[in-house]
Length: 314
Image (cartoon, rainbow, N blue to C red; front, top):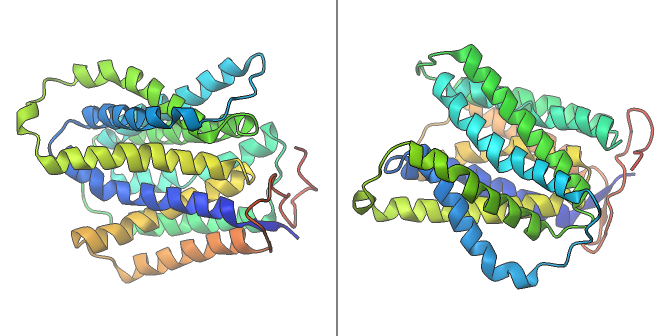
């Protein structure tokens, strides 16, 4: 029977909670700053937060060619992901983008099977499909007649963003056995600080004196909490479980975002959306908790139970 790694679930759950709250906070930042500036500044804040922690980072067991994998991982996230996501939302509706985003765990499952030789269980694949349906209900259930100037282009860009996110998960998974998750996160934030600088500056001037304190607080939270914290936690969890099981938890983010909007911003939740939240959480819990517990000190993850075609290869 597959083991339940409680430490991994704690890491992944923390990342999901932080990312889920980011949507409400991002609205506050976007009200005062251009979107690309928000992305750039959150990278800088995260990098500043990482530097004091550098002495705590374990020395990596570098192997020849690792720089290529590291470069690819940082290219996927933050560079490609945040750029594609930013442009996608300009052309399509948030509801359609949300539905497409839910495909990411399935992309990871297929890719991990092919690249990492991680064969997902029927339980995990079933949970992915159910959560995809749940996210679709969440997204479309709250859809408004918002303009979508070019939904085909926007949806293709959103799909490309999900491919980048999946690519990041796979490349980072290959590094986590030899690299400290905090170091990987710091590299991502450092590369993002450089990459997004020209994109932010090209978006036009900013009246810095007019930026309110709540916008700066939002940027700080996005940098430290949703950047350094969430990405560090997700990478730490990814280190302990198969890539597909880590990616599955990402579909909890829309549910957390919906509940956060209801609690913090007074947004409404329809009965269908409440039911979808329960469905998503229940499906992830069924997939992640359906096994015997292992102590937090457990190292390498055990293969999924009920494999589709045997045990994992590595």
